[in-house]
Length: 97
Image 1: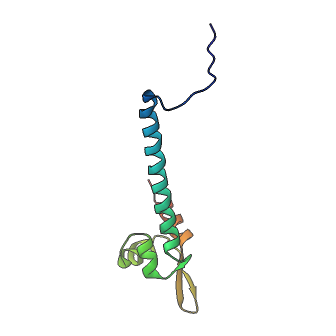
Image 2: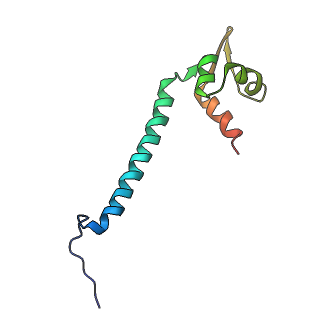
Image 3: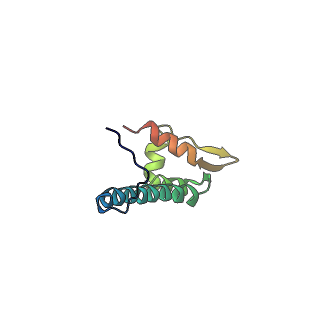
């Protein structure tokens, strides 16, 4: 017995469930990617302390009293303090369980 399919269309109602699920997954993934991109470009690459706290979704005091003493690295040039997005991401990934 040989099965030969010359043409397949997803217009058949039997494929509607699959088609709807694929669309739902694509939209969900797209939303996640857009959220990540918005966060990445909402803040400058090198942030001041207040921006970094907001980027990490913690209070300024939490960042300064808990994160910095536990290894969040600051960039200090002539008294100007900056924290890179990459450093914030690295720090959070280090403590991810």
